[in-house]
Image (cartoon, rainbow, N blue to C red; front, side):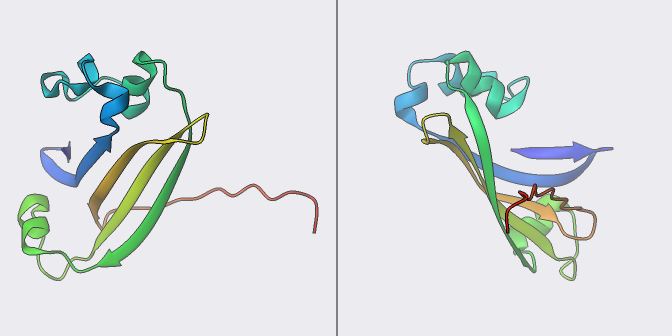
Length: 118
């Protein structure tokens, strides 16, 4: 899967869901991609409620395939990350790996809530 902004590719990714969750459903049929509302909406149609997302990041220089797909030069770094959707029961219900974005135009922004206890 890829993302386009003004006709330019900005991301490439592959997502995996559990066959035991999606087998025999419209979610398993690639003709339904891209799914309106994305992964959470897909899983929601099956009664699976994702309540948490975790992501792990690395940065590196792009592979030849990444340079070609994202239309970037060999000197432009990329961010590679893995995203996991986790259901209310703690199961990992989707893994997107790798998600690859060009590093020169991507902003990663986090908000971390800290409790009052020390």
